[in-house]
Figure 1: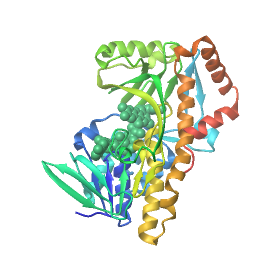
Figure 2 (figure 1 turned 120 degrees about the vertical axis):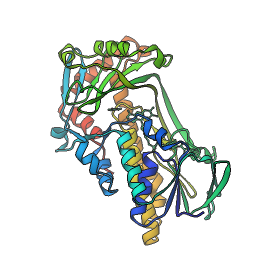
Figure 3 (figure 1 turned 180 degrees about the horizontal axis):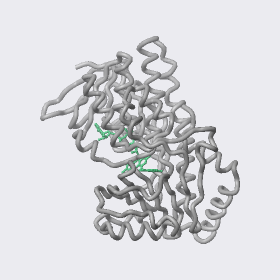
Figure 4 (figure 1 turned 90 degrees about the vertical axis):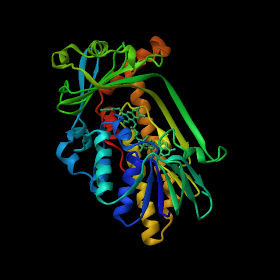
Length: 390
Ligand code: FAD
Ligand code: DHB
């Protein structure tokens, strides 16, 4: 078998790259380790920056998002028993974000790939990358007990944090930076109306909480939990009670509870691998970097990587121009580090860090008081929240 580009990983990054390249006549094969149902069953991000919305439109996968997505012009931060508003639109000259779930983005991408006859191999096992530093790389995988080989020009490593692509780069080439936080997020999805029209990020001495949504009838809530906790110890009633304790009283009459349809714990981590290129292999999305979810940057960073990488590959095939490929790693990392900074700042601002002691708690309170007394500070936060330019 042959393809111009082999894409390892059929998550949002891999599928979006495949779709954008296909529209310009560049042939791809996507290799995904799991089944399609498994990929679509993972509940993850929910907030899209304007840049990602524009890219999905360019990829011709935006019809349902434009119909069903919710435009959010601001959000609230709860602390000290009150709500404080961040007016995204007013602070950024009219910019906003779109609330539309990662599951829906992925579904729309799969539908588009199917409609265009895109090649996606599911349950591809033991994917291995070969000859990455030569000009004839190839990829092998196993499916139904048989080994297959695909010859290609380039490999896109879009296989997430636990994938094989980053691990195919020699340790003396790759430099990894990592910060693991001493807590996680317990998430709950339920078919109940959201507590508010806008998202609420809550700082509380019992721990962080987030009120988000997927639609006006489906809510997504998170509470900060310890790393020792298990979902089984958190029946729905306990989750709802804990969430209510962390929110200001004024919003509680609007809290509608109901049975969960999904509950899971995600650990929080900041991670970056440099460079994002090794020979003919290009890393994108979670394969190269992880942000803590506070501020919703993970999925959006995968999209900005794909913006740079798709342009670079299209320039190579259509104009014989390698400049974009040469610049890819540096260009992507420059934006990645700024989003890492923002996600780290938001995480530090809103979570309880018991090991930082009373001084740390006072500093955090001063940060919040300063933020809401300074239009300059709010503008800086809003600018990163809606997404830095590509
Ligand atoms: P992924 O979505 O991880 O896709 C990678 C794909 O590669 C997967 O389908 C995987 O099965 C496949 N794969 C892995 N290894 C191989 C292999 N060896 N061979 C073939 N295929 C392989 N972000 C937010 O902004 N907000 C959130 O609330 C949020 N919650 C999250 C919760 C969890 C539990 C996790 C893990 C992430 C969360 N994120 C969140 C981050 C966001 O979901 C990711 O940034 C986004 O999924 C990145 O997309 P991706 O395509 O790069 O990686
Ligand atoms: C969601 C997740 C986030 O990390 C965030 O900052 C906002 C919303 C969500 O899953 O809806």
